[in-house]
Amino acid sequence: MIAGYATPEGTQQLADQFSDLAFTPFGTTGLLVSGAGFGCYRVNAGVTAHAKALKKALTEGVNLIDTSANYADGGSEQLVGEVLSALIESGRIDREQVVVVSKGGYLQGNNYALSRQRKHDGNPFQEVVEYADGLEHCIHPGFLDDQIDRSLKRLGLETLDGYLLHNPEYYLGWAHKTGVNREVAEKEYYRRIERAFRHLEDAVQQGRIRFYGISSNTFPASTKDPEFTALQRVWEIAESIGDAHHCRVIQLPFNLFEPGAAVEKNQPDDKTVLDVARERRLGVLVNRPLNAFTGRRMVRLAGIEVRSRMDYADIIQSIKDLAQSETRLWRKILPEMESVPGGLRARIKQQGCFADTLKHHWRTFGSYERWREARDGIFLPRIQGVMDFLLPHADNNPDLADWIRSHEKTLDRAFRAVASVYADDAVALEKKILNMIGQADPAWAEPGTLSQKAIRAIASTEGVSTVLVGMRKEAYVSDVLAELHRSTDKTDRTDSWNRLRKGALEIFSD
Image (cartoon, rainbow, N blue to C red; front, side, top):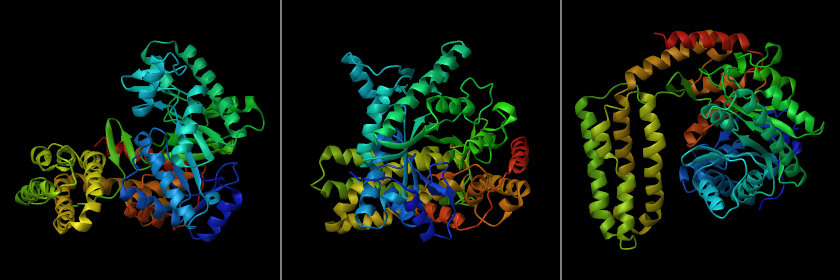
């Protein structure tokens, strides 16, 4: 277990070391945090690319990691623990320089199985919200106690810097769905939060965590939303515990198309959630900076990798080439690998073959965003798992080593061919978004990629501590670091966000 925790002295030392990088005071914790943090929503242990990306980020100045017991069913925390352990043991970073935040509340996967087993044994977790089949939620002290221990073990840490209740508004969603009176539901909701906070104060005293708070998707929501979480009320709960409480941080979604944190006046005296966070000197972590939801549409706020459509014949041929490469693996190479059992070979074929899917569906993804979501969320994680398994076998297998090299290029060509189908519309939308950003604020109009400008808009807004970015590849880390090396004043940009909101409405009303 890694001893210690992030300290004001350690984070200041790191900020001095990377003096040309943007660092921000993290509320009243005394810590300094990098303008962007490493968001671990879609990273997993055993994926080499994810480990390399996290190592690059930590060794080049990023010093905040945000994860959760729910991410990759615990695999995200495991990856963070493995990378931290290796870097600290090698002396490349110090524990005192890195702020590690995790979250608890979801019962899915292993946690859901644990919940079912405990019910069977007659010792269920208390106050569980049975939200849907395979999905429960809980912030009862008994569950949080269990989850903190499991998170610390996976992370290999003696102490977590921050621990957040993960989307506790699931209770309000359940109450609304089942017809519970809203006033009654809200009273019970905040009672549960208070009980959780009192337990987390005990965890602070025990040295298991340093500070705590809430990650809620509904902090920026309208007060009419039945799942709305009122920051002012949360703060009053914390203060009722005592002047020396350790509620120091919140997390919320905020991006170019979801500006509620800066413009939605959902707090007393016509204030926004960011207004209250600034007044209370809370650390504010922003999630979903590059994945915006507008209506029922998801818009990925990142540059377009393929900017023109390929010829029909070239698209078909690239998919045929992929099919031939996949066939070479499972018909020729795998049968000759005696160390790989037959059942495992079949599993590799199932996980790593996509040509047939692309052959039948390359014209039906609907948009560049949906294609990219399928590629990044389904295809690439599966093929990466296959590659990570096969790579050690390639040392003594020249045919396999040659296949791995050629297949990566063939796969990239096929994926780029499919992406090109949707390139024209994607490029047109990107141009509209870039124009909208530039018109909203002169500082945001300065040079940079779309993702950099999306991060800049948030990071330059007064009240935001760190923008959490899913940096699953080293290239993504480089893109974020390039933006952090720019100097953009952090100030009140309410007017800019209001102009942006108007521009967004115009884009999607066309």
